[in-house]
Image (tube, rainbow, N blue to C red):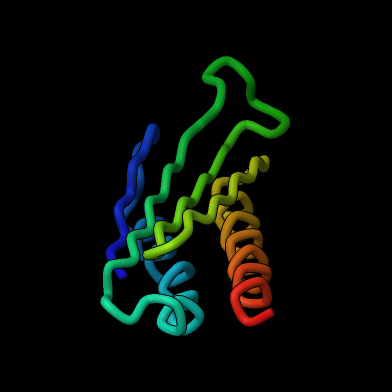
Length: 104
C-alpha cells in the first residue's frame, strides 16, 4: 500500500511518523481486497481556517483507492491528532462495510 501525504500545514517529523503508524495498521484489512498491491492511500491534513483559534479547525481526509472501489473518510477536530484518529476510525468502518458488501 502506497501512502501519499498532502499537507496544508507544517508537519513535524513526529506528526508524520504518527500518521504513518496510524494508517499502516489498516494494511491487514486492505490485503484481503488488494491482491496486486495497487492500493493507494491519499491523506490530506489541513488547517481549515487561519484566523480562528478555537473550535473545529483541523481537517483530516483519507481516500483509499482499491482495485474496484474508492473509500473516503473526512473528519474535523480541535486537535490535528484527534482529527487523524477519527479519520482512521471512519476509514476502518468503511473498510468493514465494504468487506461485508463484497462477501454478501
